[in-house]
Image (cartoon, rainbow, N blue to C red; front, side, top):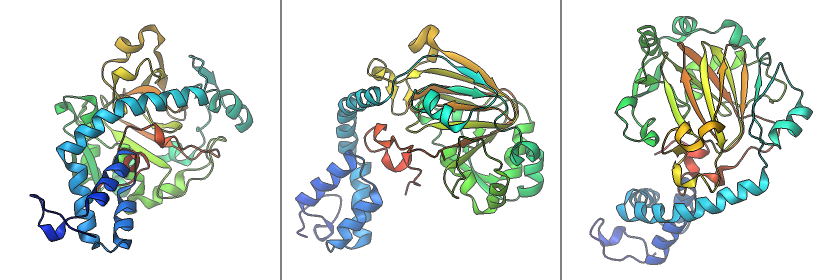
Length: 340
């Protein structure tokens, strides 16, 4: 590749203008960073240089401004596409359990939430896990804990702070009383932690609408004290939440569409559910052994009423990839990829 002058890197460490523009284009339209580096390496660029330059572009102020300008228009098109694929009935059905065929027609395709009161009652995790048991079995395992949540000035910043600590230390914090400042969240990959691999054996029998997960992905665990709040947000996939210990209050807003686009900050709602959706908000309470199906794109806010453990499953037997719905540049994170 040819090189060109630049203030940030020496001349000999630059990419040609065509390749620089190609990297920007791919990053804007959800190209995966590892894939970009591999393509550049196959074109003769040193892998370390390729990785450094892709990161430099991704972190630059100019790229951030361009991505923000693009995201509004692209999100409108994505929400229109989602509307065309899914038709929504704004209500919550409560059932003891549901067979896969009825679930597919009545909830998956219809994009309709359902609370299943007995679907996970016999799961080994529900029967055996508690914060105390996890502390006894895995207390010394180092985990990444989401911290400084209350310092966030925007909902989208809530899950960005992290600190390593033994699992027993987090569970001790949960015993101290309500708090929203220390929580295990899905992006921290607790269920993919090698030190907790034995927990996967307890994910059975599964609710009938799920298929066996393939470690290390497809299942996340949420663990923390009473008072933890996951701000209103939507996910680019369908999710089944299974409550293991404690109770959680889940408030659901209608699926995001072009009318609510102006209230979005990435995957998060920039405002309260009540301000945006008014009397269309649905509230339910999850107890141990109960499962809640949250369809793709539905805005939801989750509050722990007690010290709690929750599992979220993505391993349905039907295609569950709506990652194109994410804002520009979000594809790696939406797929569960760890940031560099």
